[in-house]
Structure formats: C-alpha cells, structure tokens
Length: 266
Image 1: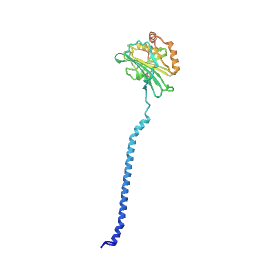
Image 2: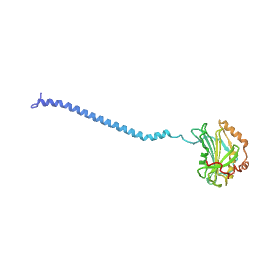
Image 3: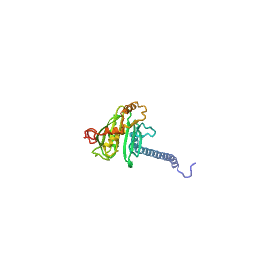
Image 4: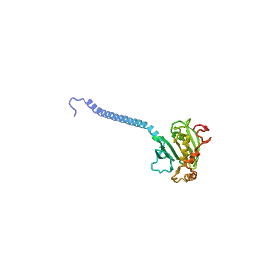
C-alpha cells in the first residue's frame, strides 16, 4: 500500500537507484583499499632496496677481506735457543708467530740500556711451496733500526751455517747508530735466518756479535722435520767459541766493513 499523495513513478525510481549507489560505494572503498595496499607494498620494497644498497659495500668488503696475518702462538714451545750469551742485555724476549697459510717464525730480541734495541734473531720456516715468493731482504729493510729506506752490502762473515751476508743502511757511517743486518737463506730445508745487531761501538764489533750469535744458535726440537734436524747436526761440528768468531769476523777486501760497493742498494 503506497502512502497517500506519493507518485508511483518516483517511488519506483528510488528503489532502483539505492542499490546502484551502494555498489558504487563498495567498489570505491575496495579500490581505495587496493591503492593503499599497492602503495604500502611499493614503500616496503623501496625500504628493502635502500637497506640492501647500503649493505653492498660491507658485503663486498667481507668477500675480498684478506686472511689474518701473523698471530702469536702462545702455547707453542720454542724450537731454538742461544747458549753461552756473554752480552750485557737488560732483558730478552722469545716470540713465536704462525701464519694461517702456513709457516712459523721464531724471533729472539734483546734490549740494551734504556730499552734501546740491541739485537734480533729471526728463524723463519716457510710452509711447503711458499718459499719461492719470499723476499727476505725487503723484510730486513723494515726491521733494522735507525731508519733509512734501503740497504747496501756490508761484506760477509763465516759461521757454522756457512757464509752469511751482511747489510747496513745506505750511506751509513760507522758509529753507534749503524746497526748491521745479516741474512742466510737455506732452500733444503726451507729456512731463512736473519736479524740485526746494534751491539758495540762500530761495525767490526757488530760483525763479531753476529758471528757469535749464529754459532751459539741451537736446535731444541725439530718436530717432524728431519731435514731441519740434519741441517743443524751437520752444522754443529763447525761451531766455534766467540773468541774464534772474533778472529774470523775481521775483514779483508771482501769482508771489511769499509768494503767497496760491489753491488747496488737493495
């Protein structure tokens, strides 16, 4: 029953428009919701892209990061020792280093008055196959005290290990600051014996100190390295007292501290 005075046509039209408006409103709400979801997804993706972009340098650095270098082997037992030391040192240290790629360094250091560096002896046993890439002379440049950028030959001395090459800083005058370096390379077994001495008042005294130091070097434990044990066993009969080393350390035209520059600087 329709209300009194109502137009039948308008009443029918109103019943048809209402569902259409409802459907449009629903669609509009759904579209807005989808837009918000789309925009939110884009914002989330943008945040992820920025985050990973900032992390790329760290990831790249991690991939190309070099292996750690030499580390102190605190629990390792010394394999070498020096006997009958007659120098007046204040203290001495014995450091054992290992490399992750293999190899072992044993470094003996002595200090003089006022903690002044007095002498150093390093025994380096490279890992198998790593000997070819070694540059012991370049390493010695960085280790010898008293500054300078290069080394020049300073003759040779004899020891129980054979001939030992000596080096000093370029253009260095004989004196208290003219430390003397030494180097012995052995291929079988793979072994590099090197170091320096600042002991004494001049290069002749340092030659004697180095000769004495090397002749007093002893092997305590070779482990499983039989060639190393044989090398020291064959050298031991050639060992002399420090007084004998003094006489062999006096130079001629080859070994003299004032020898001519037979080769260029290292």
